[in-house]
Image (tube, helix red, strand yellow):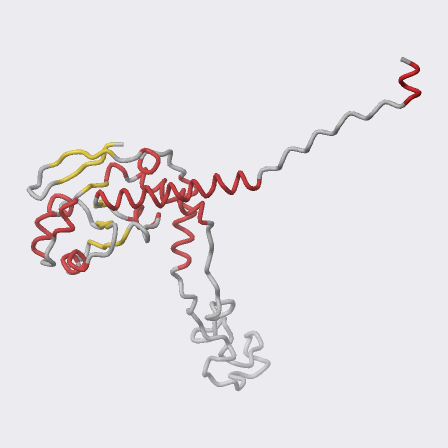
Length: 239
C-alpha cells in the first residue's frame, strides 16, 4: 500500500505501508459498532430530571372537584402540566457503557485505517518540531488547508509536538498504542510518522497472532485410534 508523504520543504512523495493494516477489506458493520461503543462509553450518565414528587409546587387541590368541567386533579406537579415533573425521564443512574472484544477492536482499527488510507500522510519531520506553533502550521499547511480535524499519530509521546499543535484547534495528537477506530474515522486527515506505522503494524500483527494461537488451543483434538480387537480361539477355528 502506497501512502502519501511530505517533506519539511513541502514536497510530496510516497511511502510503502503494509497491506494487512492499511489495505485490508473494510468491515463497515464492525467499524460502525466500534464507533458506537466508543461514543457510548464517553457518556457519563449523570443527566437527571425532577419527578412529580421532587417538583417544588403546591400540593393543594387547585380547583374544586366538581362543576368546572375539568378533570379531577389534586396537584399542579403532575407531568401533564407545564412546570410539573417529568415522567420516565433520566434518573442520573443510567449505565451506558458497552464493551467490545480486543480482537474486534483491532479489526475495527484496521478497517478504519484502510478506509482512511487516501487521507493518511506520512511526515517524519514532525518529530523535529521545537515546540513553536508557527513551525507546526508551516509543516502542516498543505494538510490544514482542506481539513477541519487533523489527527497526528506518533510512536511515543513527544512534548515538543504536543506543545506546537496545542494552539491549533483542529489538530489532536495521540500515540500508536492509544489509537482507536473512532479517532481515525472522525479525522479528515491523519498524519503519521514511519515509526508510528511500524508500531501500529507490530500492535495489530501481535493481536492477529494471539487470535491464531487461541484458535489452535481451542481446536478439538483428534480422538486416538482404537486398536483392532483380538480374535478369539473360536473365531480362529472357524476361519
